[in-house]
Length: 164
Image 1 (cartoon, rainbow, N blue to C red):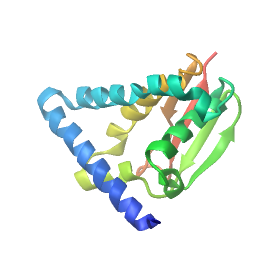
Image 2: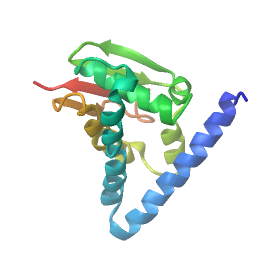
Image 3: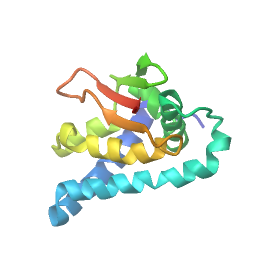
């Protein structure tokens, strides 16, 4: 059964809004930043799954390109069609640094806007602290960070870097 892009957007947006709303509700009890960090650690827990399945992912190398390939594989496995909806493009692609620009639809952006939460306040922790341990399965010198963040910027940037 083929699922339309509009239906996928609704499914992901609703799911993300519920999840982010829950994080914010917990944040009212323990502090917003701590609640977001706990969520990031749950994502980081996928590192063990990546370790166990790395050979199945057909990813070779341990540089920034391989790190972004791991993120891409996880996205497609757990959120089918999500990357395509985001209109991702590589604006830099070297062994030391990969920059993925996202300028299309984004469930996190839409969910944050629905909930009145600034993506600049929410997005860095889950992306940076949640994804860095996953790419470090390949190389402990890999780091993930966000560059630009919508809606203040025209697009979002997800950056994987190999530190010296």
